[in-house]
Length: 127
Image 1: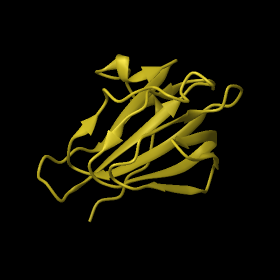
Image 2: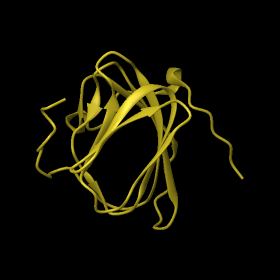
Image 3: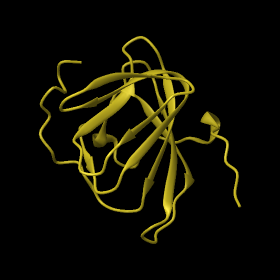
């Protein structure tokens, strides 16, 4: 068993900054390589920062641990506050991040597998 606690001081700028808009730091809490294992990433978003739209092959769970943010799909736009959990089904176009005025940290939990970062950006610029 492993226990993890996000620590902004251990987070780094993303390896792929083009996947984000605004200032974001990542702390890879658990980064397995074998299919079926769960990856855990603490994502620290400055106010207004967010991911670009993408689609994961597997479900993604976002656990908001501080602040307030948004989770947006092609059909839904929801606030996500500290203590709340969002589940985005695999194959769903989405983006997520902080609100324009509030920073946020969430833990991203998803199975190892591909992510498509080349999807259209409809509804993205309407932030």
